[in-house]
Image (cartoon, rainbow, N blue to C red; front, side, top):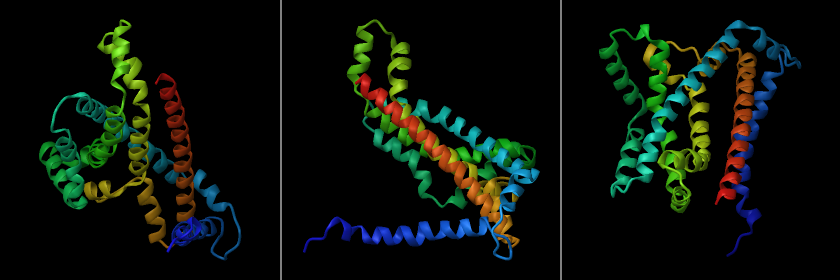
Length: 262
């Protein structure tokens, strides 16, 4: 019995309507209405005039940017060495990077908290630093894997051609390998930056107190202020969509450049 593509797509369409479109409609409804169900833009105005929400937003962006930068600084050399080495156990080493993700999240963060407490004595003195360390520990594999997959697929003849034309190892890396690995970098940045901006669980487990967007949204809903919380979630969704659009455009452009080089 054969099924058409439209028939096979029905379950996915139903899923999208129930679990994507419907929740978004509810979010929009609460974001642009007040307690009486009347249309209003006051919730949007409150977001951009409240120092608490703006401060939390900028702090979230700062933590996400620092986490992404540290992950990239650690991940690129590791991915490059693994992708270009002749080790026979590459898959085993990659699995070692991924293995921590198989362990319960709360156990990993609790263990990290104990280690940081032993090293630093009092976590309260290093909130920002430890937040970045915790986020980096959690999201590092998401940066390593896309960069590794991009570098390992590069055509080695391009490096050889660059060296035949007089480039040394450093010049070949910066003029060939690095530009062609940018799509993997962009993908890794997207996979780290976006969740790092909203993942308040790490901070909550480290300090029992959080100051980023995810916790702020939770506090609004806990106080039964669904309208304010929905607007904050909607603004955050807009930021995420804009970031995704920008990084997607960069990745497409880099892929075209890479295709031209090839």
